[in-house]
Image (cartoon, rainbow, N blue to C red; front, top):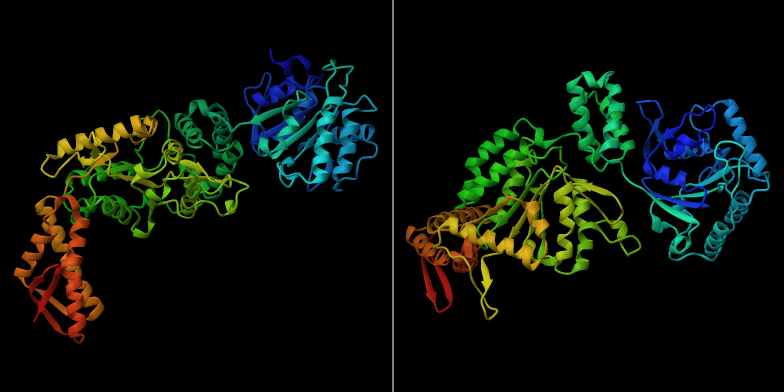
Length: 631
């Protein structure tokens, strides 16, 4: 039997509320002040004894319901907007309102008029009269928005410090009040501080003070969300959920997909769905709109399937020589487009749409494939966002991603990552060379990969559920020998299967043994995509594409028709593709030094007119200086 069932006054049905309010109710005899912090703006489920249908109440209504069943005559509320008032729930009768007002007047005959904003000094007087009442009246005072009383909980102004010192002393000198009915044992007239965070009040107020109890208000669990979803289904015309399997399935999915949201947010999502004319099976769209504020969903565009199908032909032309990596990447994208990411789990997940870990030697197309994914899915390469993780080797650099903590200079600006995703949630986000980031920064990715969300320095939640996350790494390309020198661990002559095995083993060793973060590696799962070395055939194709780009750029910038003789092409191809370890980027750097630089010198000296036809007939090398011969 619960505590509520034992002390409900006559005519008041006993209720069962959330655990935090039961803790509050049970400790009224021993604590004179309470700090309720956290999810205070939510709605809360209350079940009346003998009823199978719960109700949703605001925090103040819930507190008053609990206090009323314990024999309290009124709940006074102080907030910085309306001043001091007697709290009356919606639907209160004139008789109930009159009784509460009369009790408040009996207890506090000199209380300020409604709408008057009392000073801290006046509030001190009210709290003292409540804690040591002249009349045997049970009442409570809720100080709403207590987080705004002090400018800073750690840097109090003199009048604020004096006020909280008084409150601490008052908590120890308060007198419990008895009653003739209900709970007849003496109970305190409590002061209830309603705060956003426990640290918004001075730490010394509650530390080592047994008279002040701090109670956190958590976000609702799955059971509460399921009960709320069942309540909200009546808005879609569902009266008997148990006899409608389709409605039951939609209800369970709604509860699962709102993980991390409050019950009040679930109410707002339902209202949004009704306003947009969505059915109960379309609630996931309403959740996405509520979280992201975006009406259009690129993942549900009709042409996306065709673009991914076409990508099977277009991406290999752009990312040359990586058939295995491209195939596996496209498989993961197909899974994401169909909404099947995490489908093996028992409940819907808000994880990112896709997670890819690109591993391989330098210059083999990892970054290029990330850009190609962005262009493929979102038809916009600007939706690609890149972070060079070598810039985050220091622990404090993580503030750049999510913003500085409150109280630090510039925390209002937010973080580069969180701001970008909040502005455009449909993104491909590349974290380049992830192994170079500080381990503490890597911990931030655990929440993103598991829950699809991250809280920035301002306390706002950013959702990654529509993003594709790409991590790149060179781990396993080189390893240390016994003397601390880096030596190649894989080389171009190895078969791809052996390269893949060695690279994955090195990645596993780095995350488990070196970093001590096996849980992060576990979040990547089988999404590790290993790139091969660029072979000679692929190197020749990359060389040809880059040389053609140079010819096109000369025409675009100077209006000159440039022709390169086959013999010159062959000579350039040989010198630019000799080192397979350098990959495609190495081919480009070699072309720049061996061809672009001498070509620019020759064109600058000759200064041909726009429309001229220029032919490169040969290369001449004198020491380290390369020159081109033009005709």
